[in-house]
Length: 112
Image 1 (tube, rainbow, N blue to C red):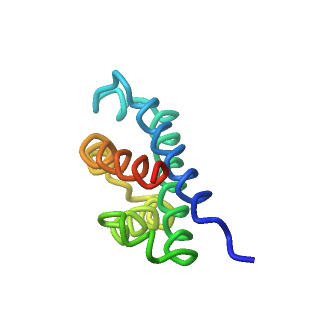
Image 2 (cartoon, rainbow, N blue to C red):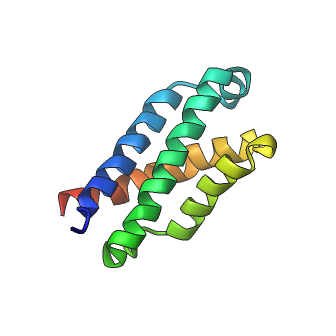
Image 3 (cartoon, rainbow, N blue to C red):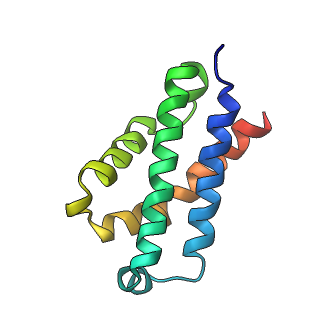
């Protein structure tokens, strides 16, 4: 039985919502100085990347509607496998610049 692609979209969307919640009202200095916040953000990025990776296997046609899906999965891989050299400034930039766009895309796909 093939998994429902909406499950992966929902998982990614939920993780994105948590990313936005965790970072609301925060600055890069807050992020840099709070190991718990950094850990929470990195974990949610891992979930986003893994759920979209699974989506790409389960339903490539839906996955193709997500811009930069390959980069999202690669970012997840960096966070997991390159954990010792994670660039906090890069994570913060992705969080502030790219997550809102991804949030919109995922919402449209779930609503459609």
